[in-house]
Length: 294
Image (cartoon, rainbow, N blue to C red; front, side, top):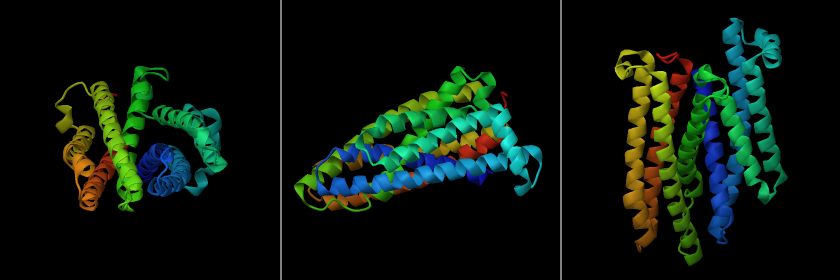
């Protein structure tokens, strides 16, 4: 179950990151940007399909756990949960949002960005409505902050993974237009990651404050220890991101040896991505447990 939740979180992050990367690159005219945008769009379609599949599996496993039935025998219970429970209705809203995203992606139209963004918001809210945040009510600040936190952390992780493994996996070469597109993309990525991080710290701080009554619970409860591990990983990722923003991106912008600067940038992005994927596993462990404040 924890592995499936981690897979769902990872697929959502890649979907958000690929959607952002495709949007940033599609408006540029260079050959490198066009090819990178195409790779981002393909990645987004695959990530949307994987997010939907993982969401279905999470629902099925969750129902099997709740009913204490074998996985195959839980199918009738899944139908009952979908038709007659808060969990099921929330899940259905998220499922419809994912199906809409897949349909919009398949349409091939360029002006579907706002609709996809709206569907991603709906899916994030649906995930929050089946989390611990719903204890304060469907229309509570807790649900709003949890939804925003999920979107922001998905954006941060997705941006890093897409940059390191998809967009910048193929160097821009030496054509001036391609180099300019690559540098503009790196600058946009750096600014967006910084903004996402600021929001993550705000929403994450709120969520931790709501979940715990005492800071000692960070080290005296299993849930708190998982949160502490996640925080350590996030801090490490922040350090790697700071190296990108203050050292590697400026070197990429002004350095004559753009190939070397790009390789260093990609290597650091991939290392940051690995750390963030470990943080996703910690987040899955958190979702599987109960906060000490609940």
